[in-house]
Image 1 (cartoon, helix red, strand yellow):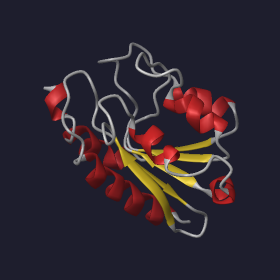
Image 2 (cartoon, rainbow, N blue to C red):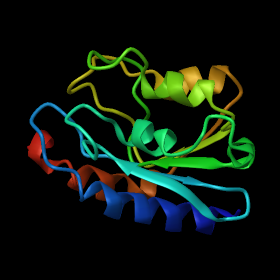
Image 3 (cartoon, rainbow, N blue to C red):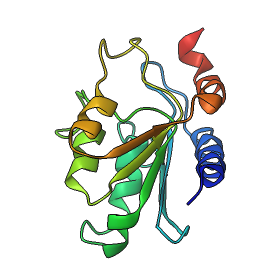
Length: 150
């Protein structure tokens, strides 16, 4: 896939993040898993199925862990995957690391508003996961979260 594809998929993930019920103390995030062939495999958004579900977690839960398409897939998330979490035993970063996904694209890094030092990107890169940041789309992803940032 090309960089232009990354932008298109991230724009779709940002649209998806607008479906999140706004919550005080939680970001609105959209995530899409796209196969190597450019096919959408799964999507998810924050609070899609319950008050604590994260976007990446929701998308990953829709596919069997041994789905062979995951090995060549890219996970698009409007926000850096969490590296710290109180509501579940596994963080989104841990869930990605347990999957065969080797490429993650994000729009922006998690600010220190809710978690003092999110290190999702660093943890992924340390395990040879390619992480691509699209700072040109960070303002759009942040805008969905204006309820927290203002």
